[in-house]
Image (cartoon, rainbow, N blue to C red):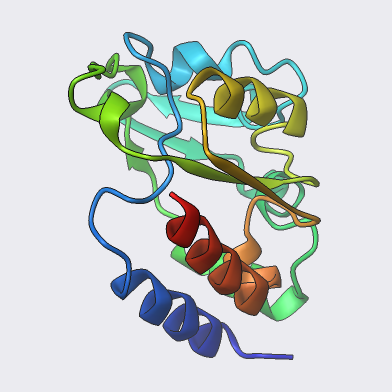
Length: 165
């Protein structure tokens, strides 16, 4: 079993070799993350968010983090991941994304779907990558966090997507 730090370094080293703008787009024009996520009725993420309007933060219920994000990860990786979870600023989740065919539309796209993802259900991921569309779709039999559970496969798949896109 690889240690978390080794996994992170491996995936990070692959990501550094990618050209900017060649990674996967995830949301549709004019919609926020929250708006898009509301259509994912199988997701465990949205109903388990803790929203702190006073601080402008959003977090995931810690007791469900493993089920939502790390279902196929080792206990060591889950422990490490939980220690790194912090509240996120709420504004990016609620702000509609504005993209154009002239800019975003001209960038070749690929998508790596995670078949055991509980944060974004596979059926919902399919709706997203079909709407974009993507030149290449790769399926991984992982949870939302293949960078922990399958870092070598993820790194290889990222390189594969970039080569086609």
